[in-house]
Length: 168
Image 1 (cartoon, one colour):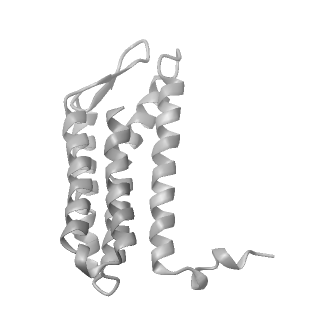
Image 2: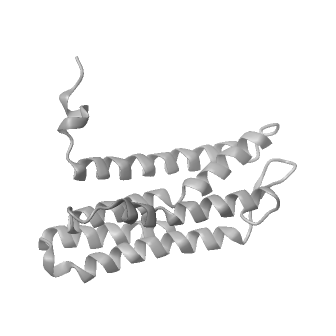
């Protein structure tokens, strides 16, 4: 039979938010691994392009998922459609940047011998992701008095980890 844990009615909103965060992180990790795996492999230029395109398109989603999670932990009753739409603006910006990048080498280019080469648009997308994480950190810090101290510490540590990991 089906495990009761996965039935939608048994998951709390907090758990669904955390699963969304984990899933988006997994998607980015898989796309990153595939991009490394196909980089320089002869005859796979189109596949390498698609994988890198999806990687950069979806790159803000783990940070957005983290922001949604932090927002819910701090104020579970605040969730509105307007808030969710605002949280997904960086994804829409990423979509616009990536569509613009199709017509040039703004974000990246795949060379004739199938090697990935960054454009300066990567810096823009990276800065946008850092801005999302910084906003989540500041949001948690601003509401630190209204949240359990343990929850606040977890929010701070997990906001710092992605930044530290990206610098290594």
